[in-house]
Length: 80
Ligand SMILES: [Zn+2]
Image (cartoon, rainbow, N blue to C red; front, side):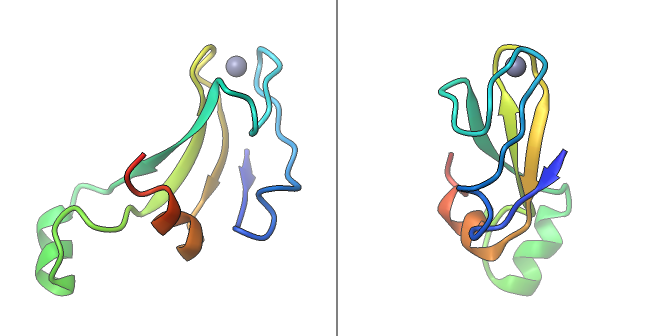
């Protein structure tokens, strides 16, 4: 599995078991939140704000292709 940033995402090539890469229509970014949402909210004054990381997962085979904790990507994909 790759770890990408906003700089390396476009040039990254990762392929899942069924042959799709990061830019396939079957692979989409999902925000992942840790369970400590309550404390997160207390400290940062937000609820359900920024995710902890983004994971790119193939919807056909379920493989995890990449993940990112890059600030720019966290904000870009937080609602998807
Ligand atoms: Zn796949």
